[in-house]
Length: 128
Image (cartoon, rainbow, N blue to C red; front, side, top):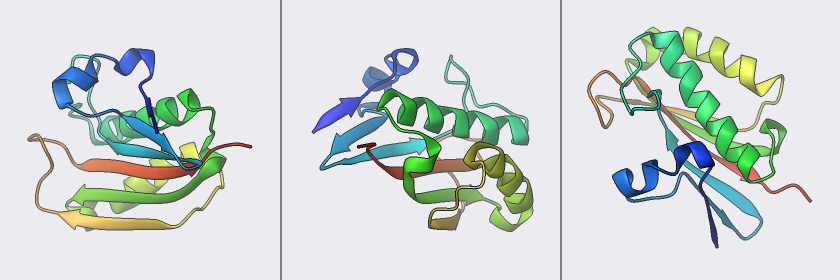
């Protein structure tokens, strides 16, 4: 197993206690990604928060040598799922570029910090 820690996310590991990604058995497992800025502050704008969470996912998968087309499973956690789902799908679709892996959306009452509305985790197959 090999941790995947993009250069811009190195500070995250000592703060959180886990790696953003982990390569194991031909797959990349991406930890739940949130919409926070470089100083770990929650982005208040909903679309901006969703966009940043997806940007983080892409940063991690690219660091492992993958692209969004290598994603084989997505799980998302949403505060007020029904209220924000349409906007989330628009943002997701900009990143996924027509790729449609299995996806599970789960409504939750809260995430790790006040103001967070979405968390994205995924699994990608390593490119051969």
